[in-house]
Length: 225
Image (cartoon, rainbow, N blue to C red):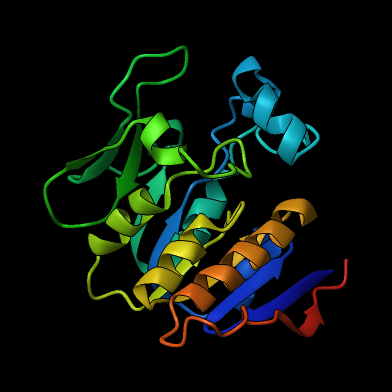
């Protein structure tokens, strides 16, 4: 059963995006980071984060089915999909990259597929710069600055959809930019983390800085198993 929580102008779903997406209207921008199918939650690089944030849930054992990308295509006018080189997506003239400005045992950069009609661009921020002073809550969590940079590539987009929300960084960036956000996350642990992070981000973005974080409001249940 999927649960929907509303926090300000964010609509957060705890459930499987394969079941929730058909219920949603089309958005201006789909910005997401699906599982790459490389088993990152069991790799040595993620052990430190894994012990803190999750229990090797197996969410990265395989890529999403190809038909799901077709469904995602129907749910937004523009698309930015991180890890696009792992999926069988149509040709694109605009790829976005994150140059991590360092060499280490993992990838030195990551690529995002887009449907944008503009030149390919690179965002440069090292992993150290990205996460210094931040308690990384998910093994594949991306910097909020990177996600905000992605959203800026579609400046007319007012509604943003993330079917693989994880710890909610896309929702955090949307709160900072005043965009409406819809996120879906299957794992309860990350769904709860996303609700907390987005609530705090919305409170920090308010004109009255001493207001408490917006309280999550469960507005309904759907999708009987």
